Structure formats: C-alpha cells, structure tokens
Length: 292
Image 1: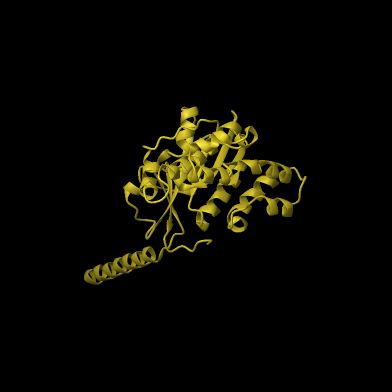
Image 2 (image 1 turned 90 degrees about the horizontal axis):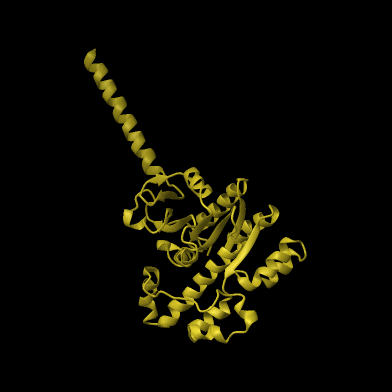
C-alpha cells in the first residue's frame, strides 16, 4: 500500500514537472524588459520609473512594431499622470516643421494638409501617427526636435563650417553655433569604422549636429514641472551618449531615464553586457515581424 502511494506520488510529480517544462518551452514572449543590473522587470515597473523622471528617451529600432506599441502605451499612461504636464518630442520631425505641427494641433489646417507637407517618414502611418494623434487629441505639445535633413546632409558633404554660412533664419532650426563634437565618445567611435570608408569625420559630425539639435530643442521646451517623452533611434541615446551627452553638457543634474531597444533570439536569456547601454532595455525576439 505504501509502495503504491509512493509510486503514485512519484508519477504525479514527474507529470507536473514535465507539464511545467512543456509550458515553459511553449512560452513565446513578445518582449522582455530588463534594468541595467540585468533583472527582468515588468511594464508597470518601467512606468513607475518613467513617472520619477523629467526626461525619458525611448530609443527604438525604427521598424520595431513592439517598440512603437510600447511607446504608445507609455504615452497614454504618462498622459494619465496629472502630476506633470506631458510633452512629446520626436526625432521623426525636423525643427522647421514645427509650424505645421502647431497649425494642425490648433485646428488651423487639415490632417491631409499636415501629412502632405510634413515630410513624413515612410512608416509614419503605422508607427508614429498613433502617438501624434494621441498627443493632438489629449492636448499635449508635440515638439519637432531634429535638424532639417538638408543641413545634416550639407555637413556630411562639406564640413561643420557649412553651418556658419547659413542665414540667420536657417540657423534658427539648428543648435547654437559653434557645435562641439567629441569624436572620442564611444557611440561616435562606433561610427568611425564606417566613417573611414565613407565620409570620414564628416559622417560623425553630421550625426553629432542631429544629436546637438535634438538636445537644444528638448531643453528649450522642457520647462520646470513638465515631463518629456522623447522618441528617437536607439543609436541617438545608447550608452547615455548622443543626445543625452549634449543635454548633460547643458543640464548636468537633469533626471533622465534611457530606454534602449535590441533584438535577441531568446528575450528571456540575454547577457549582461547587452543590458548596460541604458537604464532599461527592451528586448524583442529577433523573429518578430517588423513594419518594413
């Protein structure tokens, strides 16, 4: 009788263990969040962290559907926090487009006029429009932070000195001159391998003027008592450099949270060396479908 009970217990234990292993093996999470210490965290923990900061950089992979969805969710949840006024900043809009954004948000021009003239990214409809329309409908300012691409292109093809030859009106849409570029920053050094083949220092400088300009317009609009969620490519804020470096040069004590997006074969098994580039890392399965 006792032997039968033991056998029954052993059988039940093995059955439950096998079932648990099978369930674990079948889990296919759409994403996993980590803090910089390598601990898995929940979205609610991410939101709690975001509520504690004045400036949040959400570094995305531009074609990541999961990143864009979480940007929308974070926007909506921060909007619901009435302790601070929320501002949205976006790399995807250039500073000279601000008038179009303002006119559209004020109801002075139609959606079609705005979208026809705003030099929208090709994935705007699926990836950025939901956040833009949420901001408009809920009365949040949307700030175009990026340098007009024609000026970044001019730096790449000429040099930083080309910016000095722009008119005063044109210089309104870029960071104040002269723009300092620290080519020894790790993020820029990573570009150097490409730069030696194509563009030399001009490639780094054209990236830096984007970062400096985004930092300038972020700080111009981030007033005390407000919070900004800034959406940009991960390379603009990874390792807390890029835009973050320029912001720190002006406001060293500003409380900043950085979010970085990467892909991995298994989001539940990511090495610590991949998680120290930001305060929070969003890991998306490498097999996840993308928006383009």
